[in-house]
Image (tube, rainbow, N blue to C red):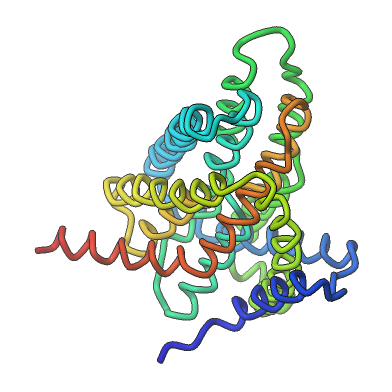
Length: 316
């Protein structure tokens, strides 16, 4: 019998405690610190490997990921608008969340692959950072169209200078410049403690997820169904793109996981500025209340299995 990863057990603990209304929340300053450590560690690891990659192949992969990030919200929007009967602004906002990416889901997937010794392309954090952006632009355009009401300067500041992007890109640059040997002095904090920090982060995420369940009850079963079906569809798109880009089995599975994830940090901040009429509860209830726990508990191993089957078919 395969035992459940301890970091997932921390998520289940937080989820259970939240549903039982137990007061185990981390102090906000500690949560902020843990979030920063995770983002920087992911960036540092990617930066070390980024220096070893040919620029041409990275540029092509980045373009493919940008295209994927633009297409996914375009697929989600009509479903949200016409099947879910959401208002235009709400449908555009939720669609943008599902075209972007969850750093926490990526961190859990990294731990999953590390435990099973499954290699994947180490420049994935670069693609992770790239995937944050296009869905935000598409979501704003879906909500407002091209008009003068869009505050381009504020949106650009929130997108490109938001904490998540700055720490990821900053970590990538530091890792790229310093190299693995140069990072040896800070390895105990950023690399050796990665899974422990992730476990504490997921404890808090479980509590936050539990807080969104009341919103799910309020808005009915549509978000529940959408929050599971959309990542399944997106994962297939990500998996096929990764396969055709020539990524390894682990890299293809990781791109499927990134495609299946939904943002709950960068996109809400950008939507708050550009589409203030959108109800943020709808987006967070779907992305945090449904998709994040589904991906963490079920989706990641499922997408890995799907990728294994695709590669087996390709080899036969």
